[in-house]
Amino acid sequence: MGRTLQQARIAAHRTVEELSGSTRVRVPIVHAIEEDDFSRCGGDVYARGHIRMLAREVGLDPQPLIEQFDTERGGRPAPTPAAPMFEAERIRPERRRPNWTAAMVAAIVAVVGFVGFTVLNGADKGSKTNEVAEGPTPDSGTKPSPTKKTETRPEPSESAIAAAPRDKVTVKLSAIDDKSWISAKAHNGKLLFDGILLKGDSKTFQDDEQIDLILGNAGAIELFVNGKKVADEFEPGQVERLSYTQGDPEVG
Image 1 (cartoon, one colour):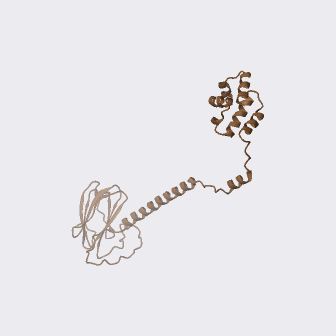
Image 2 (tube, one colour; image 1 turned 120 degrees about the horizontal axis):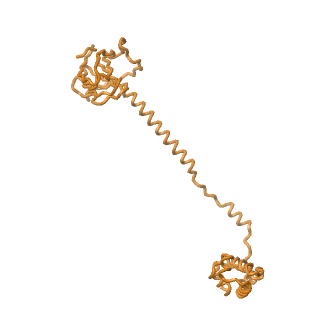
Image 3 (cartoon, rainbow, N blue to C red; image 1 turned 120 degrees about the vertical axis):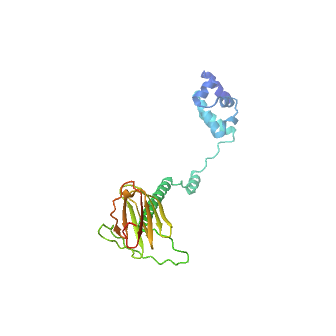
């Protein structure tokens, strides 16, 4: 068989290299087939394919060569029935690929929900902080009295007195025109606040007897004492030291 292919190639004036280039069968395999050595083909199926391509390329009918090859190899193997293979393939469970798109959408929704919750929660806490009056912490031996939830009231005007506890001193500071550094202390010297009040922010302080204030930029502050607006005209950048007790507003 190999000699037949070799003689046909020589008669066609083709070299092994030319035959390899046109059939894509490597040169060492072509040489081996022409010497009846099919061990380099990688199996009988590939050997039949190489024989068929080489025979056609040199002008031979490949069928007699294929039959001779099968005879020398003990006959062509019986084909595998298609039905069992089809059944085996059909009942093989299909592996599901992970749905990355759904996972990404779920992650984005979770992040957006978390950010929204954080922003709303922070805004709610900030509004509650502005509304609650700051005062000294009760002594550990004294049981704090329960606080009553009060309704939100309109901003007190110059002529109207808001509902402020008569047995306490209540002072509210609002930064109207600019930011200002402020300091607030209770009657016992306890520091209630020491820091910057930004424009648009407010702070409310309460004490049983007296509240002492230091305003670093008094002209930017709107001041209410016991629910009534203090009508002093402070200059921008002016530092003011103020004290208020029950029954004020009158600068101490």
